[in-house]
Image (cartoon, rainbow, N blue to C red; front, side):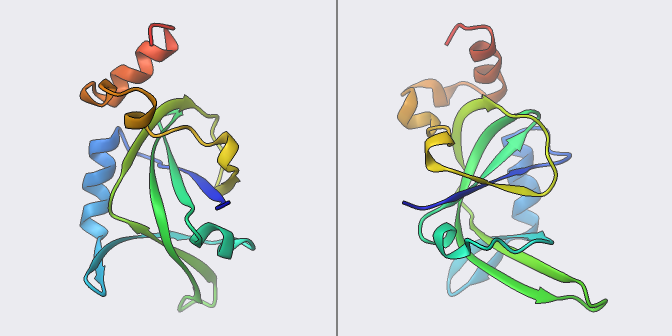
Length: 142
């Protein structure tokens, strides 16, 4: 079973803004669009993540979307500091908005704790803006 990661998307307003920010950094590798995400720490369980895991994004206090992790690379920058580069699939999959507290860096996310994809969990809800779905869920209306 693949292992997932969870990370805060700091300064991002919503899924459209995340797409806008990521699309500016997108690169093509072997004909595939990838989104690079830099971090300092290399996951010790990288093989489990690359074997089908996703990076789940927390936007404004809720897990809002996921992207499949295609590769995890590491290196050392010009100042001698180590870094990690997650290469993500360009497809952003909205998830059922799930509240999550703030944290620094990234964390492992077990598949059991990962929210389901929005389209699979509630067909038809994808027509609503994600912020509205989150608010209706918080009110207990969905």
